[in-house]
Length: 241
Image (cartoon, rainbow, N blue to C red; front, side, top):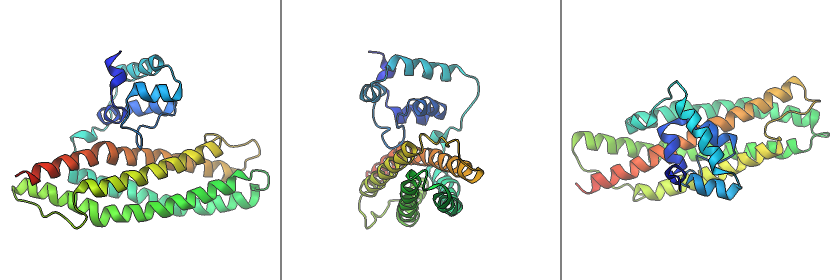
């Protein structure tokens, strides 16, 4: 079997985020379910792995660069996630909600799926607000303390939640729930395609939802595939001092 087929998807995307475009094309989850191999993901979806590998090879041959998040210090990555992605969720949630309410009011009778999309989005942003708060109050400060401890050569005090793996497991489970929720939104919106009778507000709302999901994919990818495994490894190194 081609060794690339046995590559873990999340690890591949972490090395080169340009490959995410290929997995998006075939609707293969690279963030919440990024711990599976290309072979297994293709088999599950009945996709010819050879076609996916060909597309990945084409991406690798393309000129251009991508941000190498893998090389970033963990405290910098934490700061980036909060200022870029947490802030995005907070700001866009407020922007999208009234748009959804408006198109439900105007187009809901002809497109009843909008009501379910609205409910799913509101549920998601409510959970994400709580989720991000837990990261900012508990998980991220501990990661920053670990980075400082390594830099200073000191020991760390195990926090109240125990090993970092305990809290990370909860964060990953919540990521999966929100990933599934947005997959449902994508299905209900016919993959973010607007109907012929859509007004400008309808089109803008659907475009914003698509953008929101794409940002969430990168957000979760940075945590699940880069920040979390590196933080678990760092804690083990510090505890073994």
